[in-house]
Image (cartoon, rainbow, N blue to C red; front, side, top):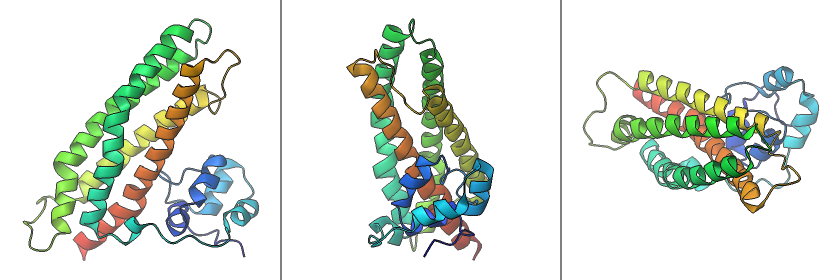
Length: 230
């Protein structure tokens, strides 16, 4: 039986993470815009919601990933260890590869200049964003979720969370620009090994960021606000 088309994209992916790949195949943003219903997202993208709903009705549901059962403190630590650390490790390494490909192939593929500019902007945005989460927001979330810990930020967490979600949108826009400029990472005929590796790793970073932002926007942050306001 097809899934509930009034459910949000974020909820659908939380119920079964395998759905994220199907939504991404159709360009449906389940992370930054995970609060939209399937019907709303399909209408905006010009897709048939009945067809997408049927595809999302996957057989043999997998067990929920362990992080879904974590409390807010443990989930915040999971995001730091898995997603933040991946970005800190990968951003400079991938940056060197992007610079190399732009330098070597830029004359024949002038669109690579835009890819390089977008990647530079993405790294600058994410570096600032991750640092703020690690210095301010996540320690406050961990304190809120730890019995007996000192009270977190006196100003409350809604404001910082709203700012982090805005910055997620900025990162999402840059990822979409890179995908659009590369025509969904379509390799040119003269693509060398470095060119292929760049596209592969950019797509990998995009997928990891989508999962990362989904965990924050659609799971962690709502739980934090519910706990803070209860």
